[in-house]
Amino acid sequence: MSPPHGNALVVEASVQLNYTTVLNVAFLVLAAALVWRFLRTGGPQMLAMMGDEPRRDGNEPRGNVGDGRLKVLRCPEAKEPASIGARPARQEANERTMPRLIGIVLVLALGACSVSPGGGGGSPPGARLNDIAGRTVSYCWSTTCVDGVVTADAPLVSTPASLHFDQTPTQLEVFVRRGAMQDFVQQPVSVADGQIGSLPAGSWDYLLAMARFSGGDAMYAWRLH
Image (cartoon, rainbow, N blue to C red; front, side, top):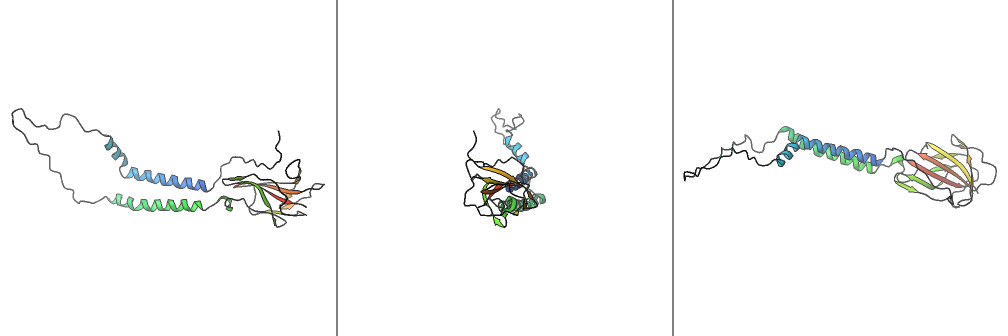
């Protein structure tokens, strides 16, 4: 079986640096900072104390009631600390540093949310044939994929000569098509340094450009008559 039209866009999985990568790195840094603070402020020792059971080693003092007299056991007097409320200088430094570090991580994370891969937000870069903007038919950009069809309301360019993009593509295929959806015929067209080569002989309805960028893929369309 074959599809009624050939506008499907197949995108290969690849490793890309985008805003989600920056967010992942930012929160990993935040998690590492919290773990570091936990270790430096006695967290493991606190957990060990919480898991210990009361000692029952038989050396605890007991009152002797065998002779009918009650012996009063006195606890040793607790020594008063030299300065009540005093904290180590290292702990005070950590308490001043951690809020700043967390603030920096949050600022970086919020800034990453406003940064979009390829400089095009949720849309691919623009394409111009003879300085006429093309219609984006299908694309996969960032986290958005759209699979459209070529329609007769595409911009008109009767004599294509030059093709330019707002962002340099890493791969480019240009072809002409006769027919839009069903029983279409298409032929490749050569492009060198932004200049369109001679079109194949015959009458053609559309010129299509399929470009791959660092942030995704897109296919653009122009009407030839």
